[in-house]
Length: 167
Image 1 (cartoon, rainbow, N blue to C red):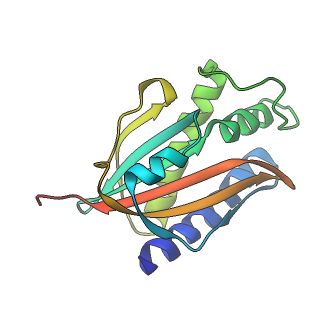
Image 2: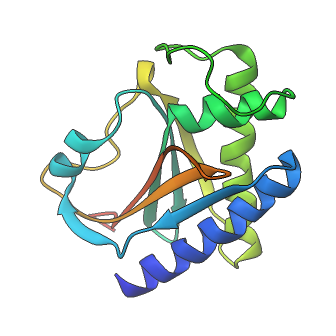
Image 3: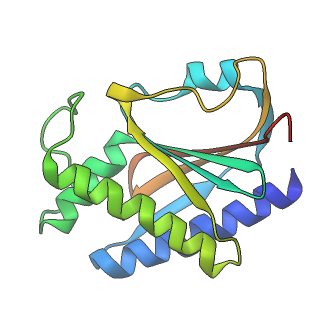
């Protein structure tokens, strides 16, 4: 698990710098020490509105769950706003938010490649069409990172991983 945590902390640090440079804004993440939990326990703690991405590299899956508030705030910033969420998040994303979510996930894939792991994007989903990437009883590595725009908290990013069974 140590390699998983260290690698993904570095990935998030580098990626947050990429986003900050693109948006000319102070986007940062603060990661925890990582944990191992059954996926069902983790799934119960996830935000209700999100974008998720499932990547694969050498028979290992990496599942990113991005709080919708991050997408709302950063897409607002991308469009020239202050990054403040002006309305209560709804279940569906606007076209601009969906565009930014895709940009965000593609940026993660590019960052993996820059760190020497060319991942395959299996799927991008949102709250409306999500499926489970792991069995409920499967133990997964988990890294939780709070996200900030400037000093304002804007949600969390969860990264989970487990080796695929049967290979």
